[in-house]
Length: 268
Image 1 (cartoon, rainbow, N blue to C red):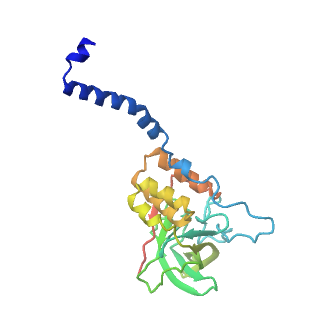
Image 2 (image 1 turned 45 degrees about the horizontal axis):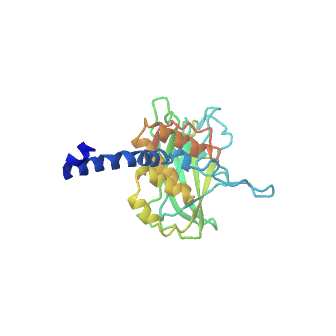
Image 3 (image 1 turned 90 degrees about the vertical axis):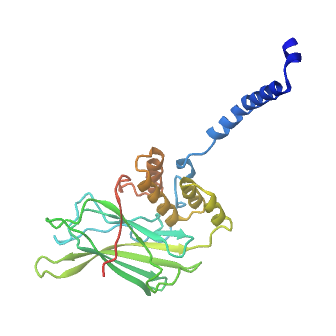
């Protein structure tokens, strides 16, 4: 008590500040510990279970390829990275699509975007670099951003679009290019974003942006932002776990989540 009476006002203020920090510290630590991980904010199953009479989803994976011109190892497949229903939503005008490219002798890929009436809106051919043995590279995940400068109008809210990807190979007998018919498809449904999404994205970190898009159930932007995050933080275990969970949520387990990412480049 004598010490308390002799203490100066400055000492009392200092003691009060220290006590305040000590008292508030557990609360701050608890708040930090309650911050949800990126993985926990991704759904375990992206699509709801389909009813028994539901139509078959669009073909996400290629069938068997005959001949040697585009031969693919039996344990690999060309896959479109879309939900089980075959259709993913997007809140943006020009989304980015992704597919899993197996080891193949294809010289190029052919990309087509169509509207719900099968009217072609965009076409592009992308050449693939090949080794001396004619192989186009190791399995990887490739992406293509729909270009706003190719006379392609922004995707309209409420409309559904379909994209197709086919392999182009060189016929060993004629030396001419041929399209391999087992192609993969994916659907894009343009939806209106949550009114607060744009503002929330401006304030969010890279990981928080992934969670925001996932909460919106925006498949294409969730996939894109998480893919970019994996490229930026290749050794982050939380990002790797989230990437694997996202692929598993749509039954894309055949895709190696450690596969490198490669954007397709338009060849004139």
